[in-house]
Image (cartoon, rainbow, N blue to C red; front, side, top):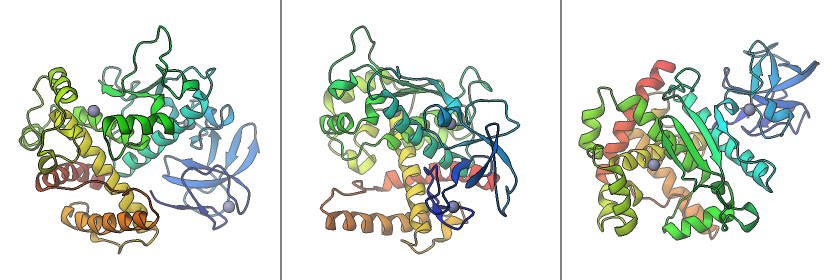
Length: 355
Ligand SMILES: [Zn+2]
Ligand SMILES: [Zn+2]
Ligand SMILES: [Zn+2]
């Protein structure tokens, strides 16, 4: 994640709603890809002060900012929508009258904005269901368990909510936004890494498989690396949950779950690629790694991997000094390296077109 600067010179983070130095309201302008300070014009309108590329631009706040205080994305004055580009992608909300649902929904929207910002930076297409009613992107945030029991007791009459992707619709069980519930799931599944942002990155991987791979040129090459996706998906998952990953999974896959089916291998590897790109960018912003050549040469995957290895070793060592678990509990084998390189090439085509 990049860091940003207020018009007063103070550093702003992507989530900020107010500048702690000049005390102005701040927000993220998606079209401009930057955070900005705002001066109230009255009538719900806000103007960008000072010098800069979007000086004088007029925005409205997202409805989810004014009504729920959970969003900091801005809407250009001329845009007819009440919600920002990110919030409009949410199709179904959890019942906000239930305890803690509003708070957890806020966490989901925050992770979604982070994801979308990364996708925009990479020049990846974000097609919503207004543009493509059959396969456009939408999010359903749903609950199937009682939030007052840390999501252990089922809600009577409520069908189970499985986090997943189907034809552009990404469903996230809001229990994943609860730290206790997610930690319990991580233990139960024997995982070393389970985060809300990770879920978004995984599920959007399925979306991009459909958009970028499914009926395009890369499909044959993708099958060579990830396996044949025509294998029975339901049977594969059933087998995985019954038998677990093969003993040698680490030699071929980034996570045990990636071994379940070629689609899951793709989505896990895709999520991983997004982790790497975003974390490397953050590290460069804060001068934690030497600015690597890959930043302006999107096709140099080996340079990216070199920078990543250097950073991951460092992050793990820092965490151990703090008595924390490894920040990066993964091993990248030869086959995983090849799969990541494949995704890198696919993304680089979009990234260079967007630059
Ligand atoms: Zn400021
Ligand atoms: Zn919004
Ligand atoms: Zn999946």
